[in-house]
Length: 104
Image (cartoon, rainbow, N blue to C red; front, top):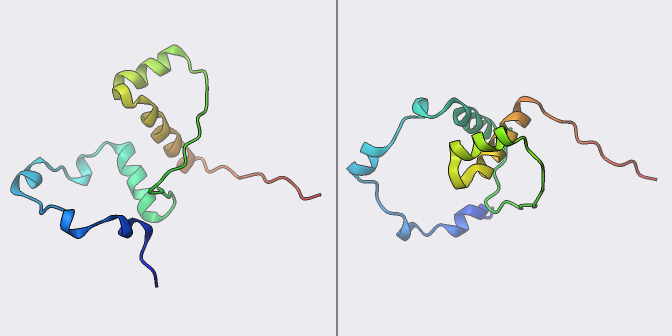
C-alpha cells in the first residue's frame, strides 16, 4: 500500500518539537468559533474533503457593498477565503444535487 500524498511532502527531520510556549499559546477546540468547529467536524466525518493542492478557478460575482464590507472588515486581506469558508459551510448544511447532462 502506497503512502498518502501529504506524507510524501513531510520530512520528519523538519518538524520541530512542540515547546511549552506552543502549548501556552494553543486554544482548545471548544474555544474555536462555532462555524470553524462545524467545518472541522464535517471534515472529520468525511463529509468535506480538503485537497492538499486545491484547484482554484477565478470567478467574478457582484456582491452588495454592505456584504463585501462586512467580510473585508472581518477578515482583512483574506476576505475571499472567509467567503469560501461561508460557502462551504452553507453547502454542508444545504447539500446540492449535482445535475449531469444526459448522454445522447
